[in-house]
Image 1 (cartoon, rainbow, N blue to C red):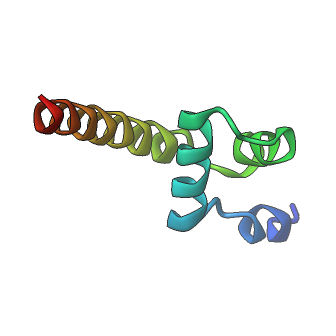
Image 2 (cartoon, rainbow, N blue to C red; image 1 turned 60 degrees about the vertical axis):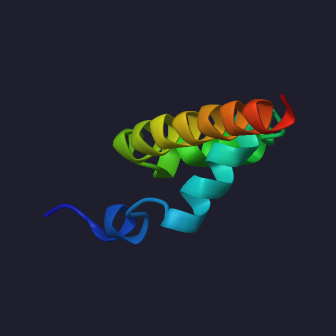
Length: 70
């Protein structure tokens, strides 16, 4: 019989944690400890989807800012 309690207690990261990691990663201020935690507990698809959405949102924001300035 295997012990699945340790696997079920670390089901992954929540939405807030994924967003926090995404923003930290985009601006280059992610700590090593949080980086390791993300790889141990997080699901890759969560970070991939959040990353794509974050980069697109950042590009749209920069494009709107540039067009507003010009």
